[in-house]
Structures are given as structure tokens and as C-alpha cells.
Image (tube, rainbow, N blue to C red; front, side):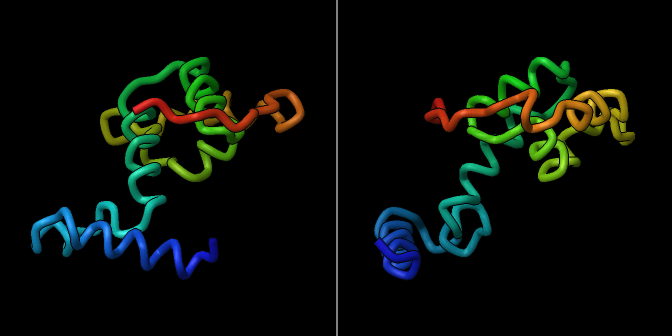
Length: 105
């Protein structure tokens, strides 16, 4: 299925089940928005480096890519948790071969 067809089906599905104010909200405007919101929830707050690796494995990406894509999730009390980001970035993609995995609801 092409991207355009997929987006059109997604838009029609949202219009069929959501109220107008929900359709106008940014959450879920794209399918990836829901995935990103879920990943951000898993990463929010204090997390150990092991937690970050588990999330990375669950979503099928490397821990360094999560640190680059979701830096706001590594903030604690308004300051970035440098130790956690450095731990995630220190692992090369070869060290952490993430395999695509199904997301848990």
C-alpha cells in the first residue's frame, strides 16, 4: 500500500470515530504520532540505562537513536540526565542489535 493511500485511510478512520475537537488535535494526526507518544511515555521520568535498552529493543531501534530522537524524555527536574544519555550513546549499534518487535499496548 502506498503512503498516500495509507494516510488517506488513516484520515478517514479518524473522521469516522473522533469528534471534531479530537480530529483537530495533533495527537494521532499521523500514525507515527501515536507510536512516538507511546515511546515518550515509556521513556518519561527517571529511567536506568537498562530501561532505555529495553524500550529500544521493544520498538526495534538502537538506544542511541532513542536518545537522539527523544532527548526531552531524558530530562529530570528541568535538566538533562547527562549520565543516562551518555550511557545510551556509548553503546554502538553493533553492541545493541535491536530487532523489530511488536509494541505492547
